[in-house]
Image (cartoon, rainbow, N blue to C red; front, side, top):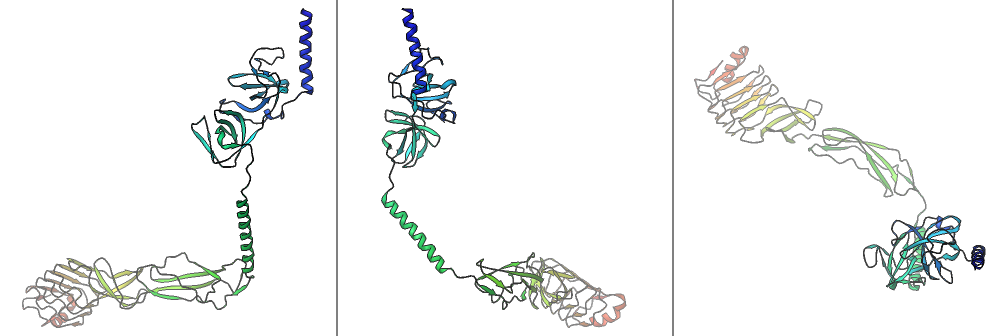
Length: 449
């Protein structure tokens, strides 16, 4: 009896060895060595699938031992998951909840593909979270067959469940209408390319000999001015203006024009850079202002010899006035030489005035009717004091002249000033100025000293 069992065991072992040489083997024995996909059904384990080809089923052994008879049997034709490839053509597999070892000769590759028949969600679990949406016509690899309407598939390395209602083994055929549309689109593109080739003009040479770039003169207005424009520029040529300065202040600005063809294939002739100047000047008679008073340009020279006249206050409620030697306009200084006619007349809150040494003329009624004006100091440059300059200034009590150049004093200059006013003049000019100021409208008690 023991001898019969031994003979049976040897025959079984020999049959197994024979099958290892002649039997069906895993279609791609090297595939387990490749990077397999991650099966959502077996977290963190590397898998791909294979089909059982043993007529009587395949037993999953607990160990890699031919004589091991433990474990469950997988029916013929069922799909198992390959977890890893072990030594001597042994594979570690799983089937359902069972895991164990089998010889690869009983397995064939289960590469089976299907195609989506609509845009189809790939889910992490049956009918749950959506991993992604597979476009219609996408190819998927089947990992586990249908279970209650769901198939476990691999789509571009992502594994999940998809509804079997929208999966088919038939490869989708391209819509003939779409083919026709594509042909039409391709034909349109080809026709368009042909038309464009027909429309394309040959390269040409554009002569810029007659293009002009000339100096431009503008008046200062406190704003940034536009650059000079190129005249006679052909439409096929563009220009770039180069300058590193802002064109706001008075002065001369150099601007360079560089030319280039709109179409790269065209060439330019006489396209050397052209330079012009933007010259910002001031206009005689133009009016500008600082915080206290407004001025009118009387001499527009910008070399330091330009002059201006004060023509009035910015605000008539001014109480103190100090006229500086110069006013800065557009980065250039102009000397203030004149207090204009009626410049501050009627400034009823004005109390004190100081005029710089550059003032050579005080105009008619320049400070008339400044009823609260109490004192005024006039600088060393005054030459002309026109009529009624201080008339009506009933509180004007202190007047001081520093100038040695005063030659002309108009009528009624001091009419209506304080009856006890004091007019101070340089000592060396006392006699001359006393004569100049006689009968100029002041009361008999006004003192000149």
